Length: 171
Image (cartoon, rainbow, N blue to C red; front, side, top):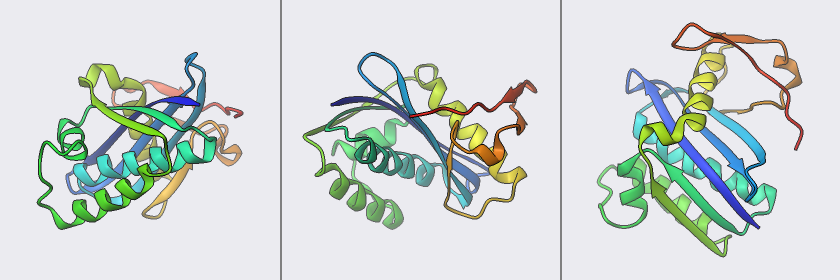
């Protein structure tokens, strides 16, 4: 099964609070999963790498075997594809874990898009940071957007000061 995946990672403060965001769709564009991973403290690059790792583990749970992943992190894409070397030791370890995870799949492609082409994953990232900070989530807290009944009525405010109601989503 082909899965279309967008990922994003971000950090406020770099390092500071951060999150990884993943949205997975099937070939027809139906959303199968939206998931965020909260970090009490991380760098932007760590969040981007963890977004890819989260995408791979989530895709395995869904049962995909061909993954088309899109990221707005040119550095991550070029390092994953072997164009750039990875100098940071923490990122090297994460990439080793990512490469092991890719072996579960028939084919994994990671391509770059401009930030505008990644708005859904970016929104998940920002919502996860907002919710994590507000609820004092621990580092590495996995947050299933649209699936957490405990936060069904939680409202968060994004950077444009618009109130967003989180919805529940059934797989």
